[in-house]
Image (cartoon, rainbow, N blue to C red):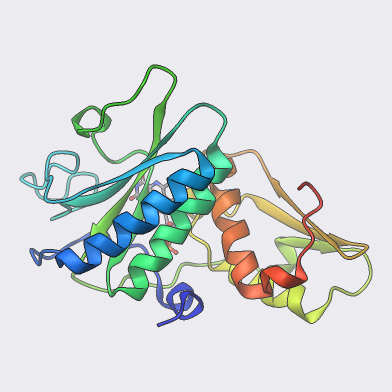
Length: 221
Ligand SMILES: Cc1cc2nc3c(=O)[nH]c(=O)nc-3n(C[C@H](O)[C@H](O)[C@H](O)COP(=O)(O)O)c2cc1C
């Protein structure tokens, strides 16, 4: 399965089975985490068979059940967008391995996460991971024309990027972003809302996957 296929199939999953993640898959994910940490300066890790953060012993804490594996997304201050971008790379890689995920900013116990951070680092989010009881459901989306603005006719690749952007998971499914096209360049802006900067990184990852990175010149890079 390609990352593009994974993007089409991914939905948030909050109920997990007992099935353990195979060591080969854990190794693939850890290798990707190492690669990401090296190039981004983020501090991402993977906790496996750790039931405390989601209190798997209490059924449906924060509507999650059976979650014992999760990515921990930590970094210094002001890295929200990068957390979103690289976290979504891990989400879609996990989906290609037949694993389900859910981004989580609130409904987990931060102080139970067994990760040591230095003074200036913080946990932004975790991403629940495992074999879902279901594959989740398609989220409702705003119409595309509420998510972008274009000066003149936007090229076909831009519209493919927009379709991919609309599939991106966003906190409370708020889709508080706007993508723009002007003079061959693409802009992306987070609107006000909880986690909207992290959402923007996720959306940009999807946009690149849909539009093809080779076509895009980002305005602000
Ligand atoms: C940054 C971020 C934070 C999120 N935090 C939570 C959370 O605390 N609890 C939860 O149940 N879902 C959380 N979600 C999942 C969203 O509710 C979900 O992605 C959205 O409703 C879209 O659905 P989909 O992921 O199935 O496409 C979060 C998603 C994102 C991107």
